[in-house]
Image (tube, rainbow, N blue to C red):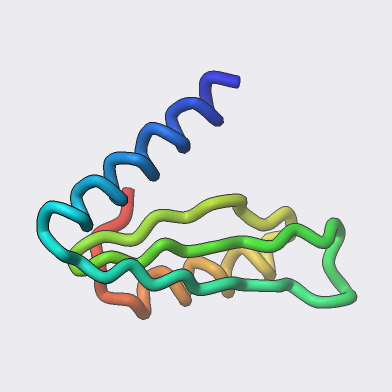
Length: 78
């Protein structure tokens, strides 16, 4: 529950910051496909200088693909 609270708080901060600084936030969706362990859809919120991941993947293969997409944005991630 605390993790969900932190995620919502962080999303609120990003949205608030985008309104103040007029940043555009792009949503990128990753769907692992039919071979996935669980059909989890991951979303990346990509702002001007940072990226936030919502819902990670379960398999190492899908996790690595997701990390590649995060790194390809060229934004800071934590």
